[in-house]
Image 1 (cartoon, rainbow, N blue to C red):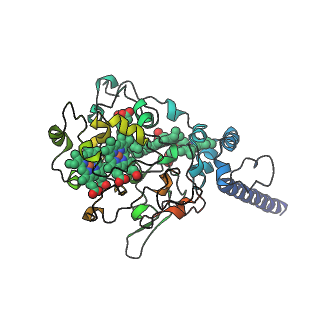
Image 2: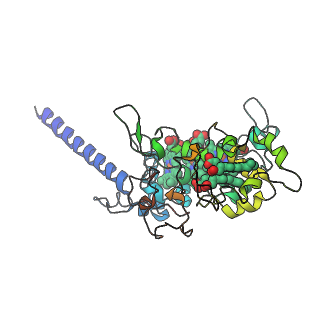
Image 3: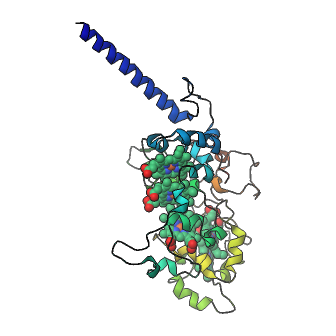
Length: 347
Ligand code: HEC
Ligand code: HEC
Ligand code: HEC
Ligand code: HEC
Ligand code: HEC
């Protein structure tokens, strides 16, 4: 009898400690947990910005085991929107230092292979990792400025998608991505349709009134004196208001492109991983025709608020401190609608 009583007490003590542990862990997940091991009541008032700060990350990283790291709140919204690369790199140095294999398992040396997309004249150097090509290659650094959270938008831990999703009664998507795109087009918290496709879509020749592939078309447009055939139409006539976003270096792109159309073609067909094209915003340009072509009817007329340059004042621009969710064009579904206080992270 005495033994049974002891067993019951032990069980409830165990239950109580498991429960306390679970509760502590839950608040650690949602609030950051810098103090959770030093005081019995975890600090609950850290803002998303504080959770994402390098200082707070360092404190958590110093105490983290694998699971705590894996579930660190910086991986999720809203904190991930505020994360600077430096904060991610506290735990993920390998992203900057990894190297591809010197040879494949079958023995083919990496120095002896070249993929079709490595034939562009802007390509240089050895085989490198995907991350290196986008954040460290000398060419990438000239034309763009991609931060970790440009691609990694975090995920809802349950749905494994950055955006809570549902299905409408008629079976159609109800997601918080642009245009209700399917929520699970994801790889490692990256939605390819909102990232890769911007620079790895196909060349939309028909929309330009052109016929055929660019390598064929360019022969008639380019010569030693006119090295960039794109600019015969895009220097002054069409869509001249472009690339005014935080993740591209607009001026450097135009400068480099003056004598090489592979600069333009590279991001608009030359490294196409998709048969489709990103539905780019269609910014007004001087002498733009009044009539909108059919394919452009539903296009936004401004870049995503998340990426708009603050200093580039457009006629209808809101004050610099306006929340991105206020500044969304009405025809585009806000990407961050669930985070009313989200601000794009400064790099
Ligand atoms: C406190 C340490 C820590 C910080 C800070 C951190 N991570 Fe992680 N992250 C981890 C650990 C641990 C894993 C699990 C690694 C594994 O399973 O190999 C992980 C996994 C990941 C994964 C893979 C997820 C998957 O589905 O497999 C991605 C992507 C990632 N982190 C991106 C980021 C980004 C982006 C940031 C900055 C916003 C960041 N991490 C900050 C520790 C951290
Ligand atoms: C251009 C988009 C892009 C950028 C910028 C980017 N990533 Fe990734 N990252 C990806 C994709 C896509 C994968 C999945 C790659 C795969 O599965 O082969 C990935 C995978 C990862 C993983 C999982 C590791 C693995 O090899 O599976 C981690 C961790 C990670 N990224 C961290 C980072 C950090 C930290 C930064 C900033 C320094 C960063 N990423 C910048 C797109 C990006
Ligand atoms: C803002 C534009 C941009 C975005 C977004 C982007 N890329 Fe790229 N990508 C580039 C550029 C520019 C290069 C060429 C870099 C170089 O030549 O060093 C490149 C190169 C590549 C390469 C060739 C790497 C090599 O070793 O030759 C692959 C593969 C690739 N990108 C896949 C992706 C995937 C997958 C995503 C989405 C997760 C993505 N890219 C997002 C611009 C972009
Ligand atoms: C013969 C003239 C011409 C040439 C040459 C040309 N374009 Fe275009 N381009 C156009 C026209 C016209 C449009 C559509 C304008 C509009 O929005 O009504 C367009 C649209 C675009 C768009 C936006 C597509 C969209 O869906 O929003 C991109 C990107 C583009 N061009 C890139 C290029 C690149 C890169 C090259 C060179 C490799 C090039 N163009 C060569 C005439 C041309
Ligand atoms: C590093 C990749 C990259 C390079 C290089 C690049 N583009 Fe783009 N381009 C983009 C992205 C991403 C967008 C969408 C930007 C946005 O959302 O506003 C875009 C948008 C455009 C648009 C649509 C403009 C609008 O907003 O109405 C045109 C036209 C265009 N690019 C033509 C060109 C031409 C011509 C060149 C060479 C001078 C070029 N691009 C070089 C990535 C690139």
